[in-house]
Length: 420
Ligand SMILES: Cc1ncc(COP(=O)(O)O)c(C=O)c1O
Image 1 (cartoon, rainbow, N blue to C red):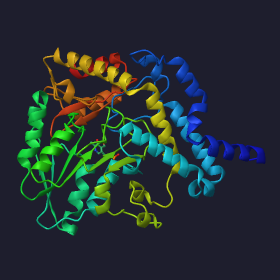
Image 2: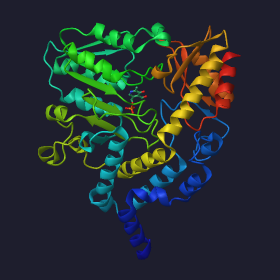
Image 3: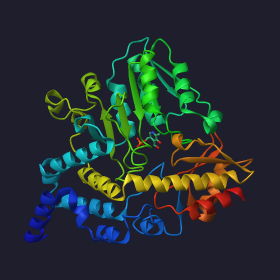
Image 4: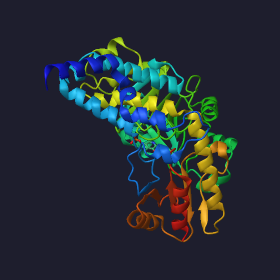
């Protein structure tokens, strides 16, 4: 590379940093093409800014999201910039500053203090930090339900023998989900709490039926019953629904921006309260950071890490902000109502997700009576290029998780094939 190009890249990246997104031609096109002033998203236009195969239908955003082209382009540029002077970008100051910006943008999105946010790699990592760090007695119990994802449960199960504490999982009654109410959810968790239950863990939105838990009510009740720590799995909520962790009674909340926030794979966010930070040491040490810093940054003392992805996380947030949560939610509400309507008209389909809009989400789970979900899913993949997640346990069901660029016609087509 010649000198002037190198200088340009260095200057460009250190001055503009995370705003490379705003200089990408595909971002200009996105802003020009998508009428951001309308109430409803134009899915046909928006879908052009994603890289999902044109003739395929991807309804598995709950497993892993897809990056918009402008954010992807920015990420690629950061990767190139990094290779232009690896030691500067991996160890130097420019991207540390931009990472601080990613933290600020994340805190704005979550309505919390930026000192409470660590930029991790995924939801599972947050739960590992907690399970490794929390001091528990032999008689103490960690409680969760069968709705918990392995990423929130396994760290506790895995460490319970070594660290000598108890773990208990109870079966969440899946048959109650469609007609469930907020009070019933709170009662279900409360009824499982025992004298020695010290930690309660639950998902904000679970990955099986997409039940949106009333986190504050569950937390307040649990604490009244003697639970000391409430930790919430936010893997499916970040980027899908508005979040407000400002006054939450939750002690830690772990998230995966690579799902609904459409950030690069391997980026995580971890909210941990100041009180909790005094009790939980970092999981790894590279510098003396943890000795002088009691912000959540102490949990990021990784040594070498993939900084371009962290820098692009800021751009993923900017992209989502440009579309706006209100517009996204309007469209999600529409997709949910239409999907439920289609499913309800068929005598051979069962809707397993909550029927109450307030408790529902963009995770919609249905069953085709008398059909194996794995076989239906295989047919959808192989014959129709349609991707969703089948479950065999605890339900024989198919999970539809679309996104803001999914056309309702694609969901209709999918359901028609499932029902045929
Ligand atoms: C509810 C829930 N929690 C945790 C995870 C784990 O996420 P990650 O692999 O990003 O740690 C997932 C992944 O699908 C999930 O759906």
